[in-house]
Image (cartoon, rainbow, N blue to C red; front, side):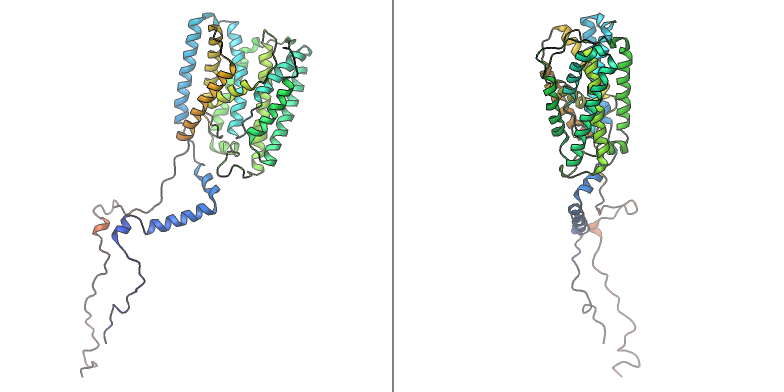
Length: 404
Protein backbone atom coordinates (compact mmCIF):
# COMPACT_ATOMS: atom_id res chain seq x y z
CA UNK A 1 0.00 0.00 0.00
CA UNK A 2 1.39 3.40 -0.96
CA UNK A 3 1.05 6.51 1.17
CA UNK A 4 -1.51 8.97 -0.10
CA UNK A 5 -0.04 12.36 0.56
CA UNK A 6 -3.38 14.11 0.26
CA UNK A 7 -4.62 12.06 3.22
CA UNK A 8 -1.99 13.50 5.54
CA UNK A 9 -2.22 17.04 4.24
CA UNK A 10 -3.24 19.56 6.92
CA UNK A 11 -6.67 21.04 6.38
CA UNK A 12 -6.33 23.95 8.85
CA UNK A 13 -3.59 25.83 6.98
CA UNK A 14 -4.18 29.52 6.40
CA UNK A 15 -4.43 30.65 2.79
CA UNK A 16 -1.16 32.00 1.52
CA UNK A 17 -2.15 34.47 -1.13
CA UNK A 18 0.85 36.48 -2.47
CA UNK A 19 -1.33 39.60 -2.53
CA UNK A 20 -1.87 39.24 1.21
CA UNK A 21 1.87 39.34 1.79
CA UNK A 22 2.23 42.31 -0.51
CA UNK A 23 -0.39 44.28 1.50
CA UNK A 24 1.05 43.22 4.85
CA UNK A 25 -2.26 41.70 5.87
CA UNK A 26 -0.74 38.68 7.58
CA UNK A 27 2.30 39.72 9.60
CA UNK A 28 1.39 43.41 9.84
CA UNK A 29 -2.16 42.70 11.05
CA UNK A 30 -0.88 40.61 13.94
CA UNK A 31 1.69 43.28 14.79
CA UNK A 32 -0.94 46.01 14.79
CA UNK A 33 -3.14 43.96 17.09
CA UNK A 34 -0.30 43.57 19.58
CA UNK A 35 0.52 47.28 19.34
CA UNK A 36 -3.11 48.18 20.09
CA UNK A 37 -3.10 45.91 23.13
CA UNK A 38 0.09 47.59 24.36
CA UNK A 39 -1.41 51.06 23.83
CA UNK A 40 -4.52 50.10 25.75
CA UNK A 41 -2.46 48.68 28.60
CA UNK A 42 -0.24 51.72 29.09
CA UNK A 43 -1.17 54.68 26.91
CA UNK A 44 0.55 57.21 29.15
CA UNK A 45 3.87 55.37 29.05
CA UNK A 46 3.79 55.08 25.27
CA UNK A 47 3.05 58.80 24.86
CA UNK A 48 5.83 59.69 27.26
CA UNK A 49 8.37 57.54 25.41
CA UNK A 50 7.36 59.07 22.09
CA UNK A 51 8.11 62.56 23.44
CA UNK A 52 11.41 61.69 25.11
CA UNK A 53 13.56 62.35 22.08
CA UNK A 54 15.81 65.32 21.52
CA UNK A 55 14.00 68.49 20.43
CA UNK A 56 14.72 69.92 17.01
CA UNK A 57 16.28 73.36 17.49
CA UNK A 58 15.99 74.48 13.88
CA UNK A 59 12.67 76.25 14.42
CA UNK A 60 14.07 78.05 17.48
CA UNK A 61 17.23 79.20 15.73
CA UNK A 62 15.28 80.40 12.71
CA UNK A 63 12.78 82.30 14.84
CA UNK A 64 15.54 83.85 16.95
CA UNK A 65 17.03 85.29 13.78
CA UNK A 66 13.65 86.95 13.14
CA UNK A 67 13.62 88.36 16.69
CA UNK A 68 17.13 89.71 16.24
CA UNK A 69 16.08 91.43 13.03
CA UNK A 70 13.03 92.89 14.80
CA UNK A 71 15.25 94.26 17.59
CA UNK A 72 17.53 95.79 14.99
CA UNK A 73 14.58 97.36 13.18
CA UNK A 74 13.16 98.97 16.34
CA UNK A 75 16.65 100.12 17.31
CA UNK A 76 17.04 101.80 13.93
CA UNK A 77 13.62 103.47 14.24
CA UNK A 78 14.51 104.75 17.72
CA UNK A 79 17.91 106.02 16.56
CA UNK A 80 16.30 107.73 13.58
CA UNK A 81 13.72 109.38 15.83
CA UNK A 82 16.15 110.50 18.54
CA UNK A 83 19.84 109.77 18.28
CA UNK A 84 20.35 110.79 21.89
CA UNK A 85 18.32 107.74 22.98
CA UNK A 86 21.50 105.65 22.86
CA UNK A 87 23.54 108.17 24.80
CA UNK A 88 23.76 108.37 28.55
CA UNK A 89 21.70 109.03 30.65
CA UNK A 90 18.90 107.94 28.29
CA UNK A 91 20.73 104.69 27.57
CA UNK A 92 20.92 103.90 31.29
CA UNK A 93 17.17 104.29 31.67
CA UNK A 94 16.65 102.10 28.60
CA UNK A 95 18.84 99.36 30.05
CA UNK A 96 17.10 99.48 33.43
CA UNK A 97 13.72 99.16 31.74
CA UNK A 98 15.02 96.24 29.72
CA UNK A 99 16.39 94.54 32.84
CA UNK A 100 13.06 94.91 34.67
CA UNK A 101 11.04 93.56 31.73
CA UNK A 102 13.64 90.85 31.26
CA UNK A 103 13.33 89.64 34.86
CA UNK A 104 9.56 89.37 34.47
CA UNK A 105 10.00 87.48 31.20
CA UNK A 106 12.55 85.15 32.78
CA UNK A 107 10.08 84.30 35.55
CA UNK A 108 7.27 83.74 33.07
CA UNK A 109 9.41 81.56 30.80
CA UNK A 110 10.71 79.46 33.68
CA UNK A 111 7.23 78.70 35.00
CA UNK A 112 5.96 78.02 31.48
CA UNK A 113 8.67 75.42 30.98
CA UNK A 114 7.78 73.87 34.33
CA UNK A 115 4.12 73.63 33.30
CA UNK A 116 2.89 76.02 36.02
CA UNK A 117 2.60 79.51 34.46
CA UNK A 118 2.78 82.12 37.20
CA UNK A 119 -0.02 84.61 36.55
CA UNK A 120 0.85 86.55 39.70
CA UNK A 121 4.18 87.99 38.54
CA UNK A 122 2.60 91.24 37.32
CA UNK A 123 0.69 91.95 40.54
CA UNK A 124 3.77 90.96 42.56
CA UNK A 125 5.91 93.42 40.62
CA UNK A 126 3.37 96.20 41.15
CA UNK A 127 3.08 95.35 44.82
CA UNK A 128 6.88 95.47 45.17
CA UNK A 129 6.93 98.88 43.46
CA UNK A 130 4.33 100.24 45.86
CA UNK A 131 6.17 98.74 48.82
CA UNK A 132 9.46 100.33 47.76
CA UNK A 133 7.71 103.65 47.20
CA UNK A 134 6.44 103.54 50.79
CA UNK A 135 9.42 101.99 52.56
CA UNK A 136 12.31 103.03 50.34
CA UNK A 137 13.47 105.67 52.78
CA UNK A 138 14.53 102.84 55.15
CA UNK A 139 17.14 101.70 52.65
CA UNK A 140 17.20 99.17 49.86
CA UNK A 141 18.02 96.16 52.02
CA UNK A 142 15.47 96.86 54.73
CA UNK A 143 12.80 97.46 52.14
CA UNK A 144 13.67 94.44 50.03
CA UNK A 145 13.95 91.75 52.74
CA UNK A 146 10.26 91.78 53.85
CA UNK A 147 9.06 91.83 50.24
CA UNK A 148 11.27 88.89 49.30
CA UNK A 149 10.20 86.87 52.35
CA UNK A 150 6.51 87.41 51.66
CA UNK A 151 6.90 86.60 47.96
CA UNK A 152 8.89 83.43 48.72
CA UNK A 153 6.38 82.27 51.34
CA UNK A 154 3.49 82.84 48.98
CA UNK A 155 5.25 80.95 46.18
CA UNK A 156 5.97 78.06 48.54
CA UNK A 157 2.32 77.82 49.61
CA UNK A 158 1.05 77.95 46.04
CA UNK A 159 3.61 75.36 44.96
CA UNK A 160 2.57 72.99 47.75
CA UNK A 161 -1.08 73.49 46.79
CA UNK A 162 -0.30 72.54 43.18
CA UNK A 163 1.78 69.49 44.10
CA UNK A 164 -0.43 68.10 46.88
CA UNK A 165 -3.82 68.62 45.24
CA UNK A 166 -2.47 68.43 41.68
CA UNK A 167 -4.48 71.39 40.42
CA UNK A 168 -3.61 73.42 37.30
CA UNK A 169 -0.82 75.89 37.91
CA UNK A 170 -2.55 78.73 36.10
CA UNK A 171 -5.62 78.40 38.37
CA UNK A 172 -3.59 78.37 41.59
CA UNK A 173 -1.41 81.31 40.56
CA UNK A 174 -4.47 83.24 39.38
CA UNK A 175 -5.94 82.89 42.86
CA UNK A 176 -2.64 84.18 44.27
CA UNK A 177 -2.68 87.06 41.78
CA UNK A 178 -6.15 88.10 42.92
CA UNK A 179 -4.94 88.14 46.53
CA UNK A 180 -1.96 90.34 45.62
CA UNK A 181 -4.25 92.68 43.67
CA UNK A 182 -6.19 93.28 46.88
CA UNK A 183 -2.96 94.50 48.48
CA UNK A 184 -2.17 96.64 45.43
CA UNK A 185 -5.55 98.34 45.43
CA UNK A 186 -5.63 99.22 49.12
CA UNK A 187 -4.10 102.56 48.11
CA UNK A 188 -6.47 105.27 47.03
CA UNK A 189 -3.80 107.53 45.52
CA UNK A 190 -0.44 107.11 43.80
CA UNK A 191 2.54 106.61 46.08
CA UNK A 192 5.50 108.95 45.78
CA UNK A 193 8.81 107.11 45.69
CA UNK A 194 10.74 107.85 48.88
CA UNK A 195 13.78 105.69 48.22
CA UNK A 196 17.13 107.12 47.22
CA UNK A 197 18.51 104.09 45.41
CA UNK A 198 19.57 104.99 41.86
CA UNK A 199 20.04 101.89 39.64
CA UNK A 200 21.32 103.83 36.64
CA UNK A 201 24.89 103.58 37.92
CA UNK A 202 24.65 99.78 37.58
CA UNK A 203 22.59 99.79 34.38
CA UNK A 204 25.08 97.83 32.30
CA UNK A 205 25.65 95.27 35.05
CA UNK A 206 21.93 94.78 35.67
CA UNK A 207 21.08 94.27 32.01
CA UNK A 208 24.18 92.12 31.56
CA UNK A 209 23.11 89.94 34.47
CA UNK A 210 19.69 89.45 32.93
CA UNK A 211 21.27 88.60 29.56
CA UNK A 212 23.59 86.06 31.18
CA UNK A 213 20.73 84.39 33.05
CA UNK A 214 18.61 84.27 29.88
CA UNK A 215 21.31 82.64 27.74
CA UNK A 216 22.48 80.18 30.42
CA UNK A 217 18.91 79.22 31.23
CA UNK A 218 18.10 78.67 27.58
CA UNK A 219 21.22 76.56 27.07
CA UNK A 220 20.40 74.38 30.09
CA UNK A 221 16.87 73.97 28.81
CA UNK A 222 18.14 72.30 25.64
CA UNK A 223 19.73 69.46 27.64
CA UNK A 224 17.31 66.55 27.38
CA UNK A 225 17.48 65.30 31.02
CA UNK A 226 17.07 68.85 32.36
CA UNK A 227 14.19 69.51 29.98
CA UNK A 228 12.38 66.33 31.04
CA UNK A 229 12.95 67.01 34.73
CA UNK A 230 11.80 70.62 34.56
CA UNK A 231 8.75 69.84 32.39
CA UNK A 232 7.41 67.00 34.51
CA UNK A 233 4.05 68.76 34.94
CA UNK A 234 3.48 68.91 31.18
CA UNK A 235 0.30 66.86 30.51
CA UNK A 236 0.77 63.75 28.37
CA UNK A 237 -2.49 61.84 28.53
CA UNK A 238 -4.80 62.73 31.43
CA UNK A 239 -4.09 66.26 32.80
CA UNK A 240 -5.58 65.32 36.16
CA UNK A 241 -3.25 62.36 36.65
CA UNK A 242 -0.85 62.88 39.56
CA UNK A 243 2.81 63.18 38.62
CA UNK A 244 4.19 62.18 42.02
CA UNK A 245 6.73 63.87 44.27
CA UNK A 246 9.29 64.07 41.48
CA UNK A 247 7.69 67.29 40.21
CA UNK A 248 7.71 69.01 43.62
CA UNK A 249 11.17 70.56 43.26
CA UNK A 250 10.80 71.99 39.73
CA UNK A 251 7.29 73.30 40.43
CA UNK A 252 8.08 74.97 43.76
CA UNK A 253 11.52 76.12 42.60
CA UNK A 254 10.23 77.75 39.42
CA UNK A 255 7.44 79.55 41.29
CA UNK A 256 9.89 80.70 43.95
CA UNK A 257 12.41 82.08 41.45
CA UNK A 258 9.73 83.76 39.34
CA UNK A 259 8.32 85.52 42.40
CA UNK A 260 11.80 86.72 43.42
CA UNK A 261 12.41 87.98 39.88
CA UNK A 262 9.08 89.83 40.00
CA UNK A 263 10.03 91.58 43.27
CA UNK A 264 13.38 92.64 41.80
CA UNK A 265 11.66 93.93 38.66
CA UNK A 266 9.19 95.94 40.75
CA UNK A 267 12.00 97.54 42.73
CA UNK A 268 13.82 98.52 39.53
CA UNK A 269 10.66 100.02 38.04
CA UNK A 270 9.99 102.08 41.15
CA UNK A 271 13.62 103.12 41.69
CA UNK A 272 13.94 104.72 38.26
CA UNK A 273 10.42 106.14 38.13
CA UNK A 274 10.22 109.93 38.08
CA UNK A 275 6.48 109.86 38.80
CA UNK A 276 4.46 108.37 41.68
CA UNK A 277 3.53 104.68 41.47
CA UNK A 278 -0.17 104.37 40.69
CA UNK A 279 -2.16 101.48 42.19
CA UNK A 280 -3.73 99.02 39.78
CA UNK A 281 -3.91 95.31 39.02
CA UNK A 282 -0.55 94.61 37.39
CA UNK A 283 -2.15 92.01 35.12
CA UNK A 284 -1.00 93.91 32.06
CA UNK A 285 2.59 93.11 33.03
CA UNK A 286 1.65 89.47 33.49
CA UNK A 287 0.30 89.43 29.95
CA UNK A 288 3.39 91.16 28.57
CA UNK A 289 5.78 88.81 30.39
CA UNK A 290 3.95 85.64 29.33
CA UNK A 291 3.57 86.93 25.79
CA UNK A 292 7.26 87.79 25.51
CA UNK A 293 8.22 84.38 26.91
CA UNK A 294 6.10 82.65 24.27
CA UNK A 295 7.35 85.00 21.55
CA UNK A 296 10.87 84.03 22.63
CA UNK A 297 10.07 80.41 21.73
CA UNK A 298 8.92 78.95 25.04
CA UNK A 299 5.93 76.69 24.50
CA UNK A 300 2.71 77.49 26.34
CA UNK A 301 2.35 73.73 26.91
CA UNK A 302 5.62 73.60 28.81
CA UNK A 303 9.06 72.04 28.46
CA UNK A 304 10.25 73.40 25.09
CA UNK A 305 12.13 76.63 24.46
CA UNK A 306 15.04 78.25 22.66
CA UNK A 307 18.39 79.69 23.70
CA UNK A 308 18.64 83.38 22.76
CA UNK A 309 14.95 84.08 22.21
CA UNK A 310 14.31 85.68 25.61
CA UNK A 311 17.18 88.13 25.21
CA UNK A 312 16.18 89.14 21.68
CA UNK A 313 12.45 89.39 22.46
CA UNK A 314 13.03 91.57 25.53
CA UNK A 315 15.45 93.80 23.61
CA UNK A 316 12.97 94.25 20.75
CA UNK A 317 10.07 95.02 23.10
CA UNK A 318 12.09 97.47 25.19
CA UNK A 319 13.17 99.37 22.10
CA UNK A 320 9.61 99.37 20.81
CA UNK A 321 8.28 100.68 24.11
CA UNK A 322 10.78 103.54 24.18
CA UNK A 323 10.16 104.33 20.52
CA UNK A 324 6.36 104.41 20.97
CA UNK A 325 6.67 106.70 24.01
CA UNK A 326 8.95 109.12 22.17
CA UNK A 327 6.69 108.91 19.14
CA UNK A 328 3.70 109.90 21.27
CA UNK A 329 1.68 106.75 20.53
CA UNK A 330 -0.97 106.47 23.22
CA UNK A 331 -1.34 102.68 23.28
CA UNK A 332 -2.64 101.05 26.44
CA UNK A 333 -0.44 98.42 28.00
CA UNK A 334 -3.38 96.02 28.07
CA UNK A 335 -3.73 96.35 24.30
CA UNK A 336 -0.01 95.78 23.88
CA UNK A 337 -0.17 92.75 26.15
CA UNK A 338 -3.05 91.30 24.12
CA UNK A 339 -1.10 91.65 20.87
CA UNK A 340 2.05 90.16 22.37
CA UNK A 341 0.08 87.23 23.79
CA UNK A 342 -1.62 86.61 20.46
CA UNK A 343 1.71 86.52 18.68
CA UNK A 344 3.10 84.22 21.36
CA UNK A 345 0.30 81.71 20.81
CA UNK A 346 1.16 81.54 17.11
CA UNK A 347 4.83 80.94 17.94
CA UNK A 348 3.79 78.21 20.40
CA UNK A 349 2.00 76.38 17.62
CA UNK A 350 5.08 76.61 15.41
CA UNK A 351 7.33 75.35 18.20
CA UNK A 352 5.09 72.39 19.01
CA UNK A 353 4.62 71.48 15.35
CA UNK A 354 8.22 71.74 14.15
CA UNK A 355 10.21 71.44 17.38
CA UNK A 356 9.09 68.08 18.69
CA UNK A 357 11.35 65.04 18.19
CA UNK A 358 11.12 63.10 14.95
CA UNK A 359 8.87 60.01 15.17
CA UNK A 360 10.71 56.69 15.44
CA UNK A 361 11.09 54.60 12.31
CA UNK A 362 8.34 52.05 11.77
CA UNK A 363 8.97 48.35 12.36
CA UNK A 364 6.26 46.96 10.08
CA UNK A 365 7.48 44.12 7.85
CA UNK A 366 7.59 44.97 4.18
CA UNK A 367 7.76 42.57 1.29
CA UNK A 368 9.90 44.89 -0.78
CA UNK A 369 12.98 43.42 -2.44
CA UNK A 370 16.26 43.63 -0.61
CA UNK A 371 19.68 44.40 -1.96
CA UNK A 372 20.56 40.71 -1.90
CA UNK A 373 17.66 39.82 -4.17
CA UNK A 374 17.13 42.75 -6.46
CA UNK A 375 14.88 40.92 -8.93
CA UNK A 376 12.58 39.28 -6.40
CA UNK A 377 8.92 40.29 -6.25
CA UNK A 378 6.07 38.71 -4.26
CA UNK A 379 4.12 37.96 -7.46
CA UNK A 380 6.91 35.77 -8.86
CA UNK A 381 7.26 33.66 -5.74
CA UNK A 382 5.56 30.29 -5.95
CA UNK A 383 3.78 29.26 -2.78
CA UNK A 384 2.50 25.86 -4.12
CA UNK A 385 4.51 22.93 -2.73
CA UNK A 386 6.63 21.21 -5.34
CA UNK A 387 5.42 17.83 -6.65
CA UNK A 388 7.11 14.89 -4.99
CA UNK A 389 9.00 12.59 -7.33
CA UNK A 390 7.84 8.97 -7.62
CA UNK A 391 9.58 6.78 -5.11
CA UNK A 392 11.74 3.96 -6.39
CA UNK A 393 11.58 1.77 -3.25
CA UNK A 394 8.10 0.39 -3.87
CA UNK A 395 6.94 -2.23 -1.39
CA UNK A 396 4.61 -3.85 -3.92
CA UNK A 397 7.55 -4.91 -6.07
CA UNK A 398 10.42 -7.22 -5.26
CA UNK A 399 10.55 -10.58 -3.60
CA UNK A 400 8.15 -9.53 -0.79
CA UNK A 401 5.61 -7.83 -3.00
CA UNK A 402 1.95 -8.83 -3.08
CA UNK A 403 2.27 -10.02 -6.65
CA UNK A 404 4.26 -13.09 -5.57
